[in-house]
Length: 521
Image (cartoon, rainbow, N blue to C red; front, side):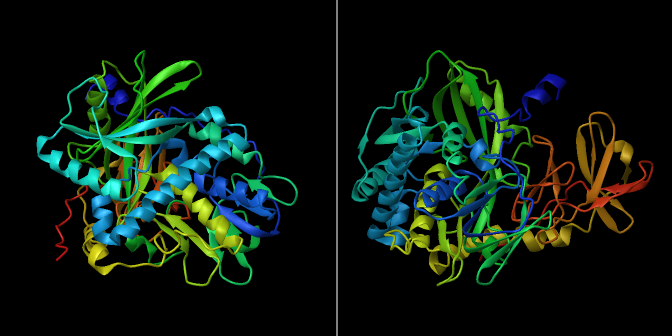
Protein backbone atom coordinates (compact mmCIF):
# COMPACT_ATOMS: atom_id res chain seq x y z
CA UNK A 1 0.00 0.00 0.00
CA UNK A 2 1.42 3.40 -0.94
CA UNK A 3 1.71 6.18 1.62
CA UNK A 4 -1.17 8.09 -0.03
CA UNK A 5 -3.45 5.07 -0.07
CA UNK A 6 -2.55 4.27 3.53
CA UNK A 7 -3.52 7.78 4.62
CA UNK A 8 -6.85 7.47 2.81
CA UNK A 9 -7.50 4.20 4.63
CA UNK A 10 -7.14 5.73 8.10
CA UNK A 11 -9.60 7.61 10.24
CA UNK A 12 -9.09 11.38 10.25
CA UNK A 13 -11.90 12.28 12.62
CA UNK A 14 -15.65 12.63 12.65
CA UNK A 15 -17.30 15.27 10.50
CA UNK A 16 -18.97 16.64 13.63
CA UNK A 17 -15.63 17.60 15.20
CA UNK A 18 -15.28 17.24 18.96
CA UNK A 19 -15.86 19.17 22.16
CA UNK A 20 -12.67 20.49 23.76
CA UNK A 21 -14.21 20.47 27.23
CA UNK A 22 -15.80 23.34 29.11
CA UNK A 23 -17.08 21.60 32.23
CA UNK A 24 -15.12 21.00 35.45
CA UNK A 25 -13.60 17.81 36.82
CA UNK A 26 -14.98 16.35 40.05
CA UNK A 27 -12.65 17.46 42.86
CA UNK A 28 -14.47 16.23 45.96
CA UNK A 29 -17.11 13.85 47.24
CA UNK A 30 -20.72 14.59 46.38
CA UNK A 31 -24.23 13.29 47.09
CA UNK A 32 -27.18 13.81 44.73
CA UNK A 33 -30.48 12.11 44.03
CA UNK A 34 -29.56 10.96 40.51
CA UNK A 35 -26.18 10.16 38.94
CA UNK A 36 -25.50 9.42 35.29
CA UNK A 37 -22.32 7.93 33.86
CA UNK A 38 -21.58 8.90 30.25
CA UNK A 39 -22.27 12.21 28.47
CA UNK A 40 -23.57 10.97 25.15
CA UNK A 41 -27.12 11.21 23.86
CA UNK A 42 -28.51 8.93 26.60
CA UNK A 43 -26.84 10.49 29.62
CA UNK A 44 -27.23 14.11 28.59
CA UNK A 45 -30.89 13.71 27.61
CA UNK A 46 -31.68 11.92 30.87
CA UNK A 47 -29.89 14.54 32.97
CA UNK A 48 -31.61 17.40 31.15
CA UNK A 49 -35.05 15.80 31.55
CA UNK A 50 -34.58 15.08 35.26
CA UNK A 51 -33.12 18.51 35.98
CA UNK A 52 -36.28 20.02 34.41
CA UNK A 53 -38.34 17.68 36.61
CA UNK A 54 -36.76 19.22 39.72
CA UNK A 55 -34.31 16.44 40.59
CA UNK A 56 -30.70 17.20 41.53
CA UNK A 57 -28.43 15.36 39.11
CA UNK A 58 -24.71 14.71 38.63
CA UNK A 59 -23.56 13.63 35.17
CA UNK A 60 -20.02 12.21 34.98
CA UNK A 61 -18.09 11.79 31.74
CA UNK A 62 -14.70 10.07 31.42
CA UNK A 63 -13.62 12.41 28.61
CA UNK A 64 -15.64 15.30 27.18
CA UNK A 65 -19.19 15.91 26.02
CA UNK A 66 -20.16 13.59 23.16
CA UNK A 67 -16.63 12.19 22.86
CA UNK A 68 -17.84 8.59 22.65
CA UNK A 69 -20.25 6.99 20.22
CA UNK A 70 -22.49 10.06 19.95
CA UNK A 71 -19.59 12.00 18.42
CA UNK A 72 -19.24 9.35 15.72
CA UNK A 73 -22.89 8.67 14.95
CA UNK A 74 -24.51 9.55 11.64
CA UNK A 75 -27.63 10.46 13.67
CA UNK A 76 -30.49 8.90 11.73
CA UNK A 77 -33.79 9.22 13.63
CA UNK A 78 -35.99 6.42 12.45
CA UNK A 79 -38.67 3.83 13.05
CA UNK A 80 -37.03 1.61 10.39
CA UNK A 81 -35.06 -0.50 12.84
CA UNK A 82 -32.01 -2.63 12.13
CA UNK A 83 -34.08 -5.61 13.30
CA UNK A 84 -36.82 -5.81 10.69
CA UNK A 85 -40.48 -5.74 11.72
CA UNK A 86 -41.22 -9.16 10.28
CA UNK A 87 -38.52 -10.58 12.56
CA UNK A 88 -39.78 -8.58 15.54
CA UNK A 89 -43.25 -10.05 14.94
CA UNK A 90 -41.79 -13.54 14.96
CA UNK A 91 -39.68 -13.05 18.10
CA UNK A 92 -41.74 -10.57 20.15
CA UNK A 93 -45.23 -10.97 18.70
CA UNK A 94 -47.43 -8.48 16.88
CA UNK A 95 -47.87 -6.45 20.06
CA UNK A 96 -44.10 -6.32 20.58
CA UNK A 97 -43.50 -5.05 17.04
CA UNK A 98 -46.18 -2.40 17.52
CA UNK A 99 -44.62 -1.28 20.80
CA UNK A 100 -41.16 -1.09 19.19
CA UNK A 101 -42.56 1.12 16.43
CA UNK A 102 -44.51 3.32 18.86
CA UNK A 103 -41.50 3.73 21.17
CA UNK A 104 -39.18 4.89 18.40
CA UNK A 105 -41.83 7.30 17.13
CA UNK A 106 -42.14 8.68 20.67
CA UNK A 107 -38.35 9.15 20.82
CA UNK A 108 -38.28 11.01 17.49
CA UNK A 109 -41.03 13.34 18.68
CA UNK A 110 -39.22 13.88 21.99
CA UNK A 111 -36.04 14.92 20.15
CA UNK A 112 -38.02 17.45 18.12
CA UNK A 113 -39.69 18.78 21.28
CA UNK A 114 -36.42 19.06 23.20
CA UNK A 115 -34.74 20.79 20.25
CA UNK A 116 -37.48 23.42 20.37
CA UNK A 117 -37.28 23.79 24.16
CA UNK A 118 -33.49 24.11 24.29
CA UNK A 119 -33.02 26.38 21.28
CA UNK A 120 -31.70 23.75 18.88
CA UNK A 121 -34.61 23.45 16.44
CA UNK A 122 -32.32 24.04 13.45
CA UNK A 123 -30.29 20.93 14.38
CA UNK A 124 -33.20 18.56 13.61
CA UNK A 125 -34.88 18.03 10.25
CA UNK A 126 -37.86 15.86 9.35
CA UNK A 127 -37.11 13.76 6.27
CA UNK A 128 -38.40 10.52 4.70
CA UNK A 129 -36.41 7.33 5.06
CA UNK A 130 -35.91 4.69 2.36
CA UNK A 131 -35.13 1.01 2.90
CA UNK A 132 -34.05 -0.43 -0.45
CA UNK A 133 -32.39 -3.39 -2.09
CA UNK A 134 -30.24 -3.72 -5.19
CA UNK A 135 -30.60 -7.50 -5.03
CA UNK A 136 -33.55 -8.94 -6.97
CA UNK A 137 -33.55 -11.96 -4.65
CA UNK A 138 -34.39 -9.67 -1.71
CA UNK A 139 -37.38 -7.95 -3.31
CA UNK A 140 -39.79 -10.39 -1.70
CA UNK A 141 -38.19 -9.76 1.70
CA UNK A 142 -38.90 -6.03 1.34
CA UNK A 143 -42.50 -6.74 0.43
CA UNK A 144 -42.77 -8.90 3.55
CA UNK A 145 -41.24 -6.08 5.58
CA UNK A 146 -43.68 -3.60 4.04
CA UNK A 147 -46.65 -5.58 5.32
CA UNK A 148 -45.11 -6.13 8.77
CA UNK A 149 -44.18 -2.44 9.15
CA UNK A 150 -47.74 -1.43 8.28
CA UNK A 151 -49.12 -3.85 10.87
CA UNK A 152 -46.76 -2.27 13.40
CA UNK A 153 -48.29 1.13 12.64
CA UNK A 154 -45.56 2.73 10.50
CA UNK A 155 -46.42 5.20 7.75
CA UNK A 156 -44.75 3.22 4.99
CA UNK A 157 -45.31 2.60 1.29
CA UNK A 158 -43.68 0.83 -1.63
CA UNK A 159 -41.82 3.59 -3.43
CA UNK A 160 -39.31 4.72 -5.97
CA UNK A 161 -35.95 5.55 -4.35
CA UNK A 162 -34.39 8.93 -5.29
CA UNK A 163 -30.79 7.78 -5.69
CA UNK A 164 -28.46 8.18 -8.69
CA UNK A 165 -28.33 4.42 -9.34
CA UNK A 166 -30.87 1.70 -9.99
CA UNK A 167 -32.50 -0.27 -7.17
CA UNK A 168 -34.78 -3.32 -7.28
CA UNK A 169 -37.31 -2.39 -4.63
CA UNK A 170 -37.78 0.35 -2.03
CA UNK A 171 -39.91 1.23 0.96
CA UNK A 172 -40.52 4.80 2.04
CA UNK A 173 -40.98 5.54 5.76
CA UNK A 174 -42.55 8.99 6.13
CA UNK A 175 -41.81 11.54 8.85
CA UNK A 176 -38.40 10.29 9.96
CA UNK A 177 -35.60 12.64 11.00
CA UNK A 178 -31.93 13.53 11.11
CA UNK A 179 -29.86 15.34 13.71
CA UNK A 180 -26.68 17.38 13.98
CA UNK A 181 -25.64 15.50 17.11
CA UNK A 182 -23.02 17.56 18.91
CA UNK A 183 -24.80 20.88 18.41
CA UNK A 184 -27.98 19.35 19.81
CA UNK A 185 -26.10 17.74 22.69
CA UNK A 186 -24.36 21.00 23.53
CA UNK A 187 -27.70 22.80 23.83
CA UNK A 188 -29.09 20.20 26.25
CA UNK A 189 -25.89 19.99 28.30
CA UNK A 190 -25.91 23.71 29.08
CA UNK A 191 -29.12 23.23 31.08
CA UNK A 192 -27.66 20.66 33.50
CA UNK A 193 -25.33 22.56 35.89
CA UNK A 194 -26.78 24.76 38.61
CA UNK A 195 -29.43 24.62 41.32
CA UNK A 196 -27.84 21.57 42.92
CA UNK A 197 -27.06 19.72 39.66
CA UNK A 198 -23.65 19.16 38.10
CA UNK A 199 -21.89 18.07 34.91
CA UNK A 200 -18.31 16.84 35.29
CA UNK A 201 -15.97 16.05 32.40
CA UNK A 202 -12.65 14.14 32.56
CA UNK A 203 -14.04 12.16 35.50
CA UNK A 204 -13.83 8.42 34.77
CA UNK A 205 -15.99 6.18 36.96
CA UNK A 206 -14.29 2.89 37.85
CA UNK A 207 -17.08 1.09 39.67
CA UNK A 208 -20.51 1.42 41.18
CA UNK A 209 -20.84 0.01 44.69
CA UNK A 210 -24.31 -1.22 45.51
CA UNK A 211 -26.07 0.16 48.54
CA UNK A 212 -28.55 2.76 49.63
CA UNK A 213 -27.40 5.07 48.19
CA UNK A 214 -25.15 3.72 45.44
CA UNK A 215 -21.54 4.89 45.51
CA UNK A 216 -19.73 5.78 42.27
CA UNK A 217 -15.96 5.57 42.70
CA UNK A 218 -13.93 7.72 40.29
CA UNK A 219 -10.39 7.36 39.02
CA UNK A 220 -9.09 10.27 41.09
CA UNK A 221 -10.45 8.83 44.34
CA UNK A 222 -13.54 11.00 44.75
CA UNK A 223 -16.99 9.48 44.94
CA UNK A 224 -20.59 10.37 44.16
CA UNK A 225 -23.48 8.91 46.12
CA UNK A 226 -26.92 8.69 44.54
CA UNK A 227 -30.24 6.90 45.01
CA UNK A 228 -30.67 6.38 41.25
CA UNK A 229 -27.85 5.61 38.82
CA UNK A 230 -27.89 5.45 35.01
CA UNK A 231 -25.04 3.63 33.24
CA UNK A 232 -25.12 5.37 29.86
CA UNK A 233 -21.76 3.89 28.89
CA UNK A 234 -22.68 1.96 25.74
CA UNK A 235 -21.84 -1.33 27.47
CA UNK A 236 -22.47 -1.21 31.23
CA UNK A 237 -19.36 -1.97 33.23
CA UNK A 238 -19.40 -4.03 36.39
CA UNK A 239 -22.23 -6.29 35.18
CA UNK A 240 -20.42 -9.63 35.17
CA UNK A 241 -22.72 -11.52 32.80
CA UNK A 242 -24.21 -8.73 30.71
CA UNK A 243 -21.48 -8.98 28.06
CA UNK A 244 -22.90 -12.41 27.11
CA UNK A 245 -26.06 -10.64 25.86
CA UNK A 246 -24.36 -8.15 23.53
CA UNK A 247 -21.53 -7.96 21.01
CA UNK A 248 -19.56 -4.89 19.92
CA UNK A 249 -18.88 -3.93 16.32
CA UNK A 250 -17.04 -1.12 14.55
CA UNK A 251 -19.12 0.84 12.05
CA UNK A 252 -17.44 3.17 9.56
CA UNK A 253 -18.41 6.40 7.82
CA UNK A 254 -17.04 8.71 5.13
CA UNK A 255 -18.18 12.18 4.08
CA UNK A 256 -17.63 14.32 1.00
CA UNK A 257 -18.69 17.86 0.00
CA UNK A 258 -21.50 17.77 -2.55
CA UNK A 259 -23.63 20.07 -4.65
CA UNK A 260 -26.36 17.43 -4.88
CA UNK A 261 -27.53 16.38 -1.43
CA UNK A 262 -29.85 13.41 -1.06
CA UNK A 263 -33.35 14.12 0.13
CA UNK A 264 -33.87 11.72 3.00
CA UNK A 265 -32.28 8.82 4.85
CA UNK A 266 -31.30 5.67 2.97
CA UNK A 267 -30.46 2.11 4.11
CA UNK A 268 -29.68 -0.83 1.85
CA UNK A 269 -29.99 -4.57 2.52
CA UNK A 270 -26.38 -5.52 1.74
CA UNK A 271 -24.38 -7.52 4.27
CA UNK A 272 -22.68 -5.55 5.74
CA UNK A 273 -25.18 -2.83 4.96
CA UNK A 274 -24.79 0.87 4.09
CA UNK A 275 -26.61 4.03 5.13
CA UNK A 276 -26.68 7.49 3.53
CA UNK A 277 -27.72 11.03 4.50
CA UNK A 278 -26.76 14.66 3.83
CA UNK A 279 -25.98 17.53 6.18
CA UNK A 280 -25.06 21.22 5.97
CA UNK A 281 -22.18 22.21 8.28
CA UNK A 282 -20.66 25.70 8.36
CA UNK A 283 -22.20 26.51 4.99
CA UNK A 284 -20.94 23.36 3.22
CA UNK A 285 -23.20 20.49 2.22
CA UNK A 286 -21.84 16.98 2.75
CA UNK A 287 -22.95 13.50 1.79
CA UNK A 288 -22.33 10.89 4.50
CA UNK A 289 -22.12 7.17 3.76
CA UNK A 290 -21.71 4.67 6.59
CA UNK A 291 -21.62 0.93 7.16
CA UNK A 292 -19.18 -1.95 6.56
CA UNK A 293 -19.53 -3.11 10.17
CA UNK A 294 -17.32 -5.84 11.61
CA UNK A 295 -16.71 -7.21 15.07
CA UNK A 296 -14.42 -5.07 17.23
CA UNK A 297 -10.89 -6.44 17.50
CA UNK A 298 -11.22 -8.55 14.34
CA UNK A 299 -9.84 -7.52 10.98
CA UNK A 300 -12.63 -7.47 8.38
CA UNK A 301 -12.38 -9.67 5.32
CA UNK A 302 -9.76 -8.14 3.04
CA UNK A 303 -7.83 -6.44 5.84
CA UNK A 304 -8.33 -3.48 8.18
CA UNK A 305 -8.22 -0.85 5.43
CA UNK A 306 -11.06 -2.47 3.52
CA UNK A 307 -14.06 -0.77 5.24
CA UNK A 308 -12.93 2.73 4.23
CA UNK A 309 -11.94 1.53 0.77
CA UNK A 310 -15.37 -0.03 0.24
CA UNK A 311 -17.16 3.08 1.51
CA UNK A 312 -15.00 5.16 -0.82
CA UNK A 313 -16.15 3.00 -3.75
CA UNK A 314 -19.74 3.38 -2.57
CA UNK A 315 -19.64 7.19 -2.35
CA UNK A 316 -17.97 7.32 -5.78
CA UNK A 317 -21.35 6.18 -7.15
CA UNK A 318 -22.50 9.71 -6.29
CA UNK A 319 -19.52 11.18 -8.16
CA UNK A 320 -17.75 12.11 -4.92
CA UNK A 321 -14.44 11.51 -3.17
CA UNK A 322 -14.45 11.49 0.66
CA UNK A 323 -12.55 14.03 2.71
CA UNK A 324 -13.51 12.70 6.17
CA UNK A 325 -13.30 9.14 7.50
CA UNK A 326 -14.18 7.87 10.97
CA UNK A 327 -15.72 4.98 12.85
CA UNK A 328 -17.69 4.35 16.02
CA UNK A 329 -18.75 1.47 18.22
CA UNK A 330 -22.08 -0.31 17.69
CA UNK A 331 -23.55 -2.70 20.27
CA UNK A 332 -25.73 -5.53 18.99
CA UNK A 333 -28.07 -7.39 21.32
CA UNK A 334 -28.58 -11.14 21.01
CA UNK A 335 -32.34 -10.87 20.45
CA UNK A 336 -32.54 -7.75 18.27
CA UNK A 337 -33.86 -5.14 20.73
CA UNK A 338 -32.01 -2.98 23.28
CA UNK A 339 -31.76 -3.78 26.98
CA UNK A 340 -33.17 -0.81 28.91
CA UNK A 341 -34.10 -0.83 32.56
CA UNK A 342 -32.97 -1.78 36.08
CA UNK A 343 -30.16 -4.35 36.06
CA UNK A 344 -32.12 -6.28 38.71
CA UNK A 345 -35.83 -6.21 39.38
CA UNK A 346 -36.78 -3.64 41.98
CA UNK A 347 -33.42 -1.85 42.01
CA UNK A 348 -32.35 1.62 40.94
CA UNK A 349 -29.21 0.87 38.91
CA UNK A 350 -30.47 1.44 35.36
CA UNK A 351 -28.69 0.23 32.23
CA UNK A 352 -29.19 1.02 28.54
CA UNK A 353 -27.35 -0.90 25.82
CA UNK A 354 -27.71 -2.90 22.62
CA UNK A 355 -28.94 -0.03 20.43
CA UNK A 356 -27.45 -1.53 17.24
CA UNK A 357 -27.49 1.08 14.44
CA UNK A 358 -30.29 3.11 16.02
CA UNK A 359 -28.36 4.71 18.87
CA UNK A 360 -29.69 8.26 18.66
CA UNK A 361 -33.30 7.09 18.69
CA UNK A 362 -32.87 4.37 21.33
CA UNK A 363 -30.59 6.55 23.45
CA UNK A 364 -33.32 9.14 23.67
CA UNK A 365 -35.90 6.45 24.43
CA UNK A 366 -33.65 5.15 27.24
CA UNK A 367 -33.48 8.63 28.76
CA UNK A 368 -37.27 8.88 28.63
CA UNK A 369 -37.64 5.50 30.35
CA UNK A 370 -35.08 6.36 33.04
CA UNK A 371 -36.89 9.66 33.65
CA UNK A 372 -40.13 7.73 34.28
CA UNK A 373 -38.34 5.21 36.51
CA UNK A 374 -36.87 7.92 38.73
CA UNK A 375 -40.23 9.69 38.99
CA UNK A 376 -42.01 6.43 39.82
CA UNK A 377 -44.12 6.44 36.66
CA UNK A 378 -45.16 3.41 34.65
CA UNK A 379 -43.65 3.35 31.17
CA UNK A 380 -45.51 1.57 28.36
CA UNK A 381 -42.27 0.17 26.90
CA UNK A 382 -40.63 -1.07 30.10
CA UNK A 383 -41.51 -4.75 29.68
CA UNK A 384 -40.52 -4.92 26.00
CA UNK A 385 -37.01 -3.60 26.65
CA UNK A 386 -36.56 -5.07 30.16
CA UNK A 387 -32.81 -5.35 30.80
CA UNK A 388 -33.14 -8.64 32.69
CA UNK A 389 -34.99 -10.49 29.93
CA UNK A 390 -33.68 -13.65 28.29
CA UNK A 391 -35.50 -15.26 25.36
CA UNK A 392 -34.00 -18.74 24.95
CA UNK A 393 -35.36 -19.49 21.47
CA UNK A 394 -34.22 -16.14 20.10
CA UNK A 395 -31.04 -15.54 22.08
CA UNK A 396 -29.31 -18.87 22.63
CA UNK A 397 -27.62 -19.43 19.26
CA UNK A 398 -26.45 -15.79 18.84
CA UNK A 399 -25.19 -15.80 22.45
CA UNK A 400 -23.11 -18.94 21.89
CA UNK A 401 -21.83 -17.71 18.52
CA UNK A 402 -20.74 -14.31 19.83
CA UNK A 403 -19.38 -15.76 23.08
CA UNK A 404 -17.22 -18.37 21.34
CA UNK A 405 -14.41 -15.83 20.83
CA UNK A 406 -13.70 -15.58 24.55
CA UNK A 407 -12.50 -19.13 25.30
CA UNK A 408 -10.92 -19.41 21.85
CA UNK A 409 -8.79 -16.30 22.42
CA UNK A 410 -7.77 -17.35 25.92
CA UNK A 411 -6.38 -20.51 24.29
CA UNK A 412 -4.76 -18.96 21.22
CA UNK A 413 -3.28 -15.98 23.09
CA UNK A 414 -0.49 -18.27 24.32
CA UNK A 415 1.09 -18.63 20.87
CA UNK A 416 3.28 -16.37 18.69
CA UNK A 417 6.32 -16.24 16.35
CA UNK A 418 9.86 -14.84 16.66
CA UNK A 419 11.03 -11.28 15.97
CA UNK A 420 12.45 -8.06 17.47
CA UNK A 421 11.22 -4.57 18.24
CA UNK A 422 12.83 -3.49 14.97
CA UNK A 423 9.95 -5.25 13.18
CA UNK A 424 7.56 -2.56 14.45
CA UNK A 425 7.47 0.40 12.08
CA UNK A 426 6.64 3.97 13.08
CA UNK A 427 2.91 4.40 13.55
CA UNK A 428 2.49 0.65 14.00
CA UNK A 429 1.65 -1.59 16.92
CA UNK A 430 2.04 -5.32 17.52
CA UNK A 431 1.44 -7.80 20.29
CA UNK A 432 4.84 -9.29 21.15
CA UNK A 433 6.12 -11.77 23.70
CA UNK A 434 8.85 -10.94 26.17
CA UNK A 435 9.66 -14.00 28.24
CA UNK A 436 6.33 -15.42 29.34
CA UNK A 437 4.36 -12.19 28.95
CA UNK A 438 2.61 -10.73 25.90
CA UNK A 439 3.02 -6.98 25.47
CA UNK A 440 1.11 -4.47 23.38
CA UNK A 441 3.91 -2.42 21.83
CA UNK A 442 3.45 0.74 19.78
CA UNK A 443 6.10 2.86 18.03
CA UNK A 444 4.92 6.43 17.46
CA UNK A 445 5.73 8.67 14.49
CA UNK A 446 8.87 9.90 16.27
CA UNK A 447 10.14 6.38 16.88
CA UNK A 448 9.38 6.31 20.61
CA UNK A 449 8.07 2.98 21.94
CA UNK A 450 5.23 2.52 24.42
CA UNK A 451 4.57 -0.92 25.90
CA UNK A 452 1.75 -2.33 28.02
CA UNK A 453 0.55 -5.69 29.14
CA UNK A 454 -1.50 -7.02 26.23
CA UNK A 455 -4.14 -8.38 28.62
CA UNK A 456 -7.41 -6.49 28.40
CA UNK A 457 -8.27 -5.25 31.88
CA UNK A 458 -11.84 -6.49 31.50
CA UNK A 459 -11.43 -10.29 31.37
CA UNK A 460 -7.87 -10.91 30.24
CA UNK A 461 -7.98 -11.53 26.47
CA UNK A 462 -5.04 -10.17 24.50
CA UNK A 463 -5.79 -6.96 22.62
CA UNK A 464 -4.89 -6.51 18.96
CA UNK A 465 -3.70 -3.38 17.14
CA UNK A 466 -6.21 -1.47 15.02
CA UNK A 467 -4.12 0.36 12.36
CA UNK A 468 -7.08 2.35 11.04
CA UNK A 469 -7.58 4.18 14.34
CA UNK A 470 -4.23 3.46 16.06
CA UNK A 471 -5.90 1.77 19.01
CA UNK A 472 -5.68 -1.48 20.95
CA UNK A 473 -8.96 -3.40 20.56
CA UNK A 474 -10.14 -6.46 22.48
CA UNK A 475 -11.66 -9.14 20.22
CA UNK A 476 -13.53 -10.82 23.09
CA UNK A 477 -15.86 -8.16 24.49
CA UNK A 478 -15.03 -5.03 22.48
CA UNK A 479 -13.06 -2.88 24.93
CA UNK A 480 -10.71 -0.41 23.22
CA UNK A 481 -7.62 1.42 24.46
CA UNK A 482 -5.51 4.29 23.11
CA UNK A 483 -1.84 3.79 22.28
CA UNK A 484 -1.01 5.30 25.69
CA UNK A 485 -3.21 2.69 27.38
CA UNK A 486 -6.29 4.78 28.24
CA UNK A 487 -9.76 3.25 27.96
CA UNK A 488 -11.62 4.38 24.84
CA UNK A 489 -14.58 1.99 24.99
CA UNK A 490 -15.81 -0.34 27.74
CA UNK A 491 -16.71 -2.65 29.32
CA UNK A 492 -13.13 -2.23 30.62
CA UNK A 493 -12.76 0.64 33.11
CA UNK A 494 -9.03 0.41 33.87
CA UNK A 495 -6.16 1.36 31.57
CA UNK A 496 -3.72 -1.20 30.17
CA UNK A 497 -0.87 -1.88 32.59
CA UNK A 498 2.36 -0.13 31.45
CA UNK A 499 5.59 -2.05 31.00
CA UNK A 500 9.19 -0.83 30.76
CA UNK A 501 11.15 -2.59 28.00
CA UNK A 502 14.46 -2.27 26.19
CA UNK A 503 13.92 -1.84 22.46
CA UNK A 504 16.74 -4.23 21.54
CA UNK A 505 15.09 -7.07 23.48
CA UNK A 506 14.51 -10.22 21.44
CA UNK A 507 10.78 -10.86 21.47
CA UNK A 508 8.18 -13.03 19.78
CA UNK A 509 5.70 -11.27 17.51
CA UNK A 510 2.10 -12.48 17.63
CA UNK A 511 0.85 -12.76 14.06
CA UNK A 512 -2.73 -13.22 15.27
CA UNK A 513 -3.16 -16.92 14.52
CA UNK A 514 -6.54 -17.91 13.19
CA UNK A 515 -9.15 -18.80 15.77
CA UNK A 516 -10.71 -22.25 15.48
CA UNK A 517 -14.36 -22.34 14.48
CA UNK A 518 -16.67 -23.09 17.41
CA UNK A 519 -20.04 -24.51 16.44
CA UNK A 520 -23.06 -22.85 18.06
CA UNK A 521 -24.88 -26.17 18.01
